[in-house]
Image (cartoon, rainbow, N blue to C red):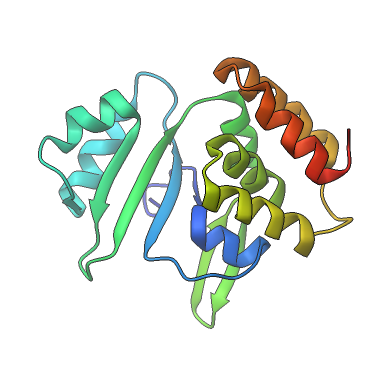
Length: 172
C-alpha cells in the first residue's frame, strides 16, 4: 500500500496498543481509502499479493466493503474500504507510530479509534473505548468525537451509542 502511495491506516487492536490499554491481537485491521466505485482497483492488486481467507473473496469484499487476507506468515488482515467523509478526515489525521525499533505503522488517531470502536459497539469494543478514555484522559477532542459519531449514529439509527459515549466522556 505504501509502494502504491495509497491512503491507509492501521485501526483495531494494533491502534489500541498505541492509544488504549495495551492488549494482544492476532490480526491486523486496516482502513484503505478507496472511495465508492473504485474498490476493485484496490482489491485486485491486494489479492495478487496476499492469500484470500475465503473463497470468492473479491465478490465478498465488493459486497461487504472488507477484504479478508492472510499474510505470508499466517497473520490475518482485514482491509476495510473507506469512503465516508469521516474516513477521509481520519486519513488526513493518521500518523506514523513506531511499535518497536524498525517497525513503524501509520495508525488512526485516538479520537478516530474511539469513534470506530463505539460505532461497532461490541463488548470488546466498549472495553477498548473505556481504555482509550482512561489513557488519554483530558487529551481527547470531544467535539470531534461527538461530531462524527453523531453523524454515524444517525445513519445507523443507534442513538444509544452516542448517549453511552457522551456518558463515558462526561459530556452529557
